[in-house]
Length: 239
Image (cartoon, rainbow, N blue to C red):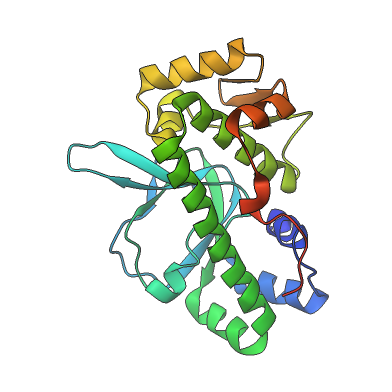
């Protein structure tokens, strides 16, 4: 059930058999979540954290007029809300973009991990720090990159993340969201999103259509986006 989580962890850290068993024993589920369902609402008291097993989910914030900003995309192997363990509630909402499957880590079981497996606690801490690093890069995109560069940068990031959990095929991967939702990650209207994706296609860099991304020129896409994967902390480290 947690194979993609293990792939994600082992790409950066060694994991003992005892730690793997502890992780498996921490989780309950799975549960299927339909597309477009908000699974956690801001301010809701939390007693568990969510691991995405399959599908695509996001964090978002919105305004009273319904305008929405997606602030993070989560792919299989990601914890959506480990930070909720200490915060006890979120200042944003969590939603399934596509049909998804999740497992839950009850906070009392995370308590046991902190007591019995302190190194796993540090790996959880690393995960929340990594989320923060990605948030900062998204903020830079929203504030400084042109629309086409924002789209290119996000596709580069997603390619790295999907590849880490074995979900790419020859520089292609499924991204089960529509252009409107993709635009909500970039702070762009649907019309502008369509325009920047057309530009990437015309430049021979990448194509995104019908929930599928095909990267035509990975080196070119990275150069165009000024993509530096350092913020994803891909090197293997000892914690």
